[in-house]
Image (cartoon, rainbow, N blue to C red):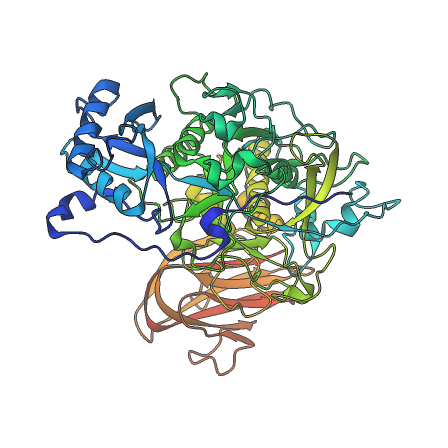
Length: 640
């Protein structure tokens, strides 16, 4: 079995310092409309996205756009920078984006300072709402597993022969996603998952029924590998290799010290397999939401993919209209993006707008935190408003050494720790150091189908996406209203399994628990019933009680009836502001100071957790005490 890995996540492969050009006081009004975060000192830029205000002459008007930008070029002094012997500085119009912005291209690549000045001058026109670089994003650069031949088993649950020995990430009770326990209630049927990535390759262990209905959104021929610019039907991956002279930086390509030449990654195929690989078919491995349909959308090719193409792909995949592309006949309910790059994402950026549109259509958007061992707030789309951001942990539940972290991260999922005991170096752990799924053996174009291991937040992300598909599929089958993206996010965080170790950096609410999430979405718990005689607020199994608040020193009591034979009990508080501690006691309310409590959790902030492995049949009381004033706190009681 040959193992493959994906291409570099540009700035996500290493933490970069962004040195921005000086901002003069006179430029301040324009600067507020310009996103300079994707610029860095050694970068070269020739594509820009300009969003004109609604009702302006320029919006959707190619000639007016060119006139506007050419005037900005003149004010920026770029035309004068060309010598008489040099080719004239030319601005060309590329295309109109679904969110209403325009993409323009300059005839030569600009330095950081030149690009910043041009964007400021463009933004100085009152008709302009926002300007940003059409940045090249990339698939998260994952880590390659050593070659290993899986040992087929005669029996397993399911019967896929590589499942038991390789797919620890589905059922390991410490660092895994508890997928196997979810399959009794959900399989993702009637759910469409859009994988916005490199596309998909033919594989007998994948359902490719929507591959022709997908789309290749790459407009630039150099990136797509086609003979001419333009988008084409079908979500097929034709390869994203950067080997060969064509891609050397000296020839205008993308290979340099930070981006070494690489064979094709088949990244989208690997992601698609984790989400929905055919399961219990006696072949290969298993997929999380194995009855869901994957809609492959190609945005990443040779050297990566442009922000403008990715934004249009988000619009189209979620059911929006994109000029020049037939409308999507299979709109997605959840989108997976295991891609990104350096820079922040605001609601005014095209990616932020496209994501907001998708969420407005009821589509949940799940993205990778990144592999730079850095704060995810410095990366896009991980910093876009409304997305579910996924960090990576290994088999021990420890944060993978490469995983991004921070307050923007929603939760973690198994992405592979690479080394034994999830260390940051040492002996590679195989197979348990990696996540295993479908790939291809081709060095450039597709050849033979295969299975392979990768590690990264790219691999953690589809575990959460697959769980979302399980939730939605279970709700459809039960005939209950589908959870909104905000409700999905709440379910995932409320049911995430507490980290089994103390994490060195914040990586969200816990590790995704597919079984608990599906159970919570279906409301498979006890009814609240009558409040306990002592006035405690009754909790319902798996249901979140939100909006709780109190003052410093205040005490609030909650109660959950736990029946005989119940599995692991989780009692949690999270979210909101302030600082609380919790005290838990079975059979009666704990004292206000917790002196007689059976269990306690007292950490800085509002995230407190008590786990009881084998709870007795009793009423469990949870006393929440305000260490500081708190508001909008969520309280959860969950047993299996």
